[in-house]
Amino acid sequence: MELEEGVQVDDDMILHISDAIETLSGQLAPWHDAFNQRYFSDLSFLLAALAFDMQQAVQLKFEIVRDVLATNDRRRIDNIVDNLSDFLGNIMT
Image 1: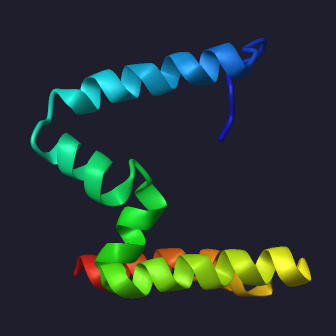
Image 2: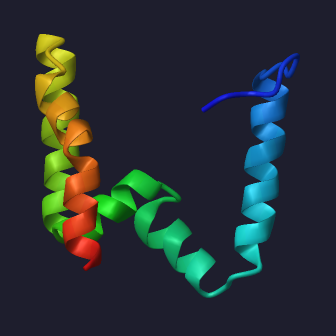
């Protein structure tokens, strides 16, 4: 992503953008409420649950976080991220 020259990104800007997105999303109830309650407002978790199922998404999230924290080895998560566009293309068709 490329920012306009001279644009400063700081915590206040990120919070403002987050609030604006939340406000827009709130206008899409009941989908907004389901996203907040079922997926904890976490887009990556929503994608994982759609790709696998809820149980497997939760299991994978805990396994991957535990592995990265225990070993400081990011190869598994990096492989998933590297193949994400191929994976999303397959589930969207």
